[in-house]
Length: 358
Image (cartoon, rainbow, N blue to C red; front, side, top):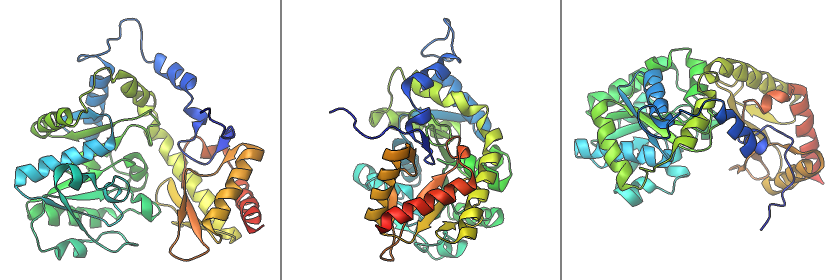
């Protein structure tokens, strides 16, 4: 059936269709190739992307995957097989557990030890009392479902050292590593050096089409290559996915600090107004949540009305809250959100809540 949803003209949502229309993306990709660009091989876009990200992250090697779900499951499987342990630890709101149907267990027979408080970051104290051998520990930086929270650098280093001392591997869910880097203010390779394996998304911060890259030492990547093939991820002609990620690779790190400053300004305006609440305040990264004193379903309907009337998309998804009559949505500031002034966002929230109350 044809898509009958209202057209999006402006959006606070990072993955809005505005800058993801096929023609726009294809024109950006075409600027990176010429008649002599090969589809595959060492000079093809996939190999170039793998080398570029391995260099950025200070790792020996990197491997393209068609999805982050496959990349992270592969990393955990390799760590588990290597250590003869089937359990890994992660925060209770880890993306692998909440959004990926527990594929680590269904596909690989791995078990998650949910570690830490549901509403707070995992701590060294939480890790110290686990009391069973682990194959790996996963850190999601920033913790998306906690409003973009990050551990302080010294705390993160302490946690990783504690885990490594037990023989477990350290794995980074770095889907939003570019956002995290704006807070840590450290080179990407210094952040990545804490971890045995690092996954980065090609379509979140990088605004590509799809895909992921897993970076590590060369032997680990070679074993991961075998698992990628077993899982059906060794696809041919992945060059369009690599090209789409390469479009923003050179410029993203320079743009991210401005995105973070704009996120801070929007959050400050929301909290000064007091009608809604932005969390974190101030945001550590360009990612934060807006909490609304209204029912989720009423807010969803109000948001659809604003989209239909003005072409403005406010979110990708509304999150329910444990407290009745409240909900929240995520703002991840990129090119789309930079088009809104803080005062405009506040005005939109007022309009949204007025409609939801009717």
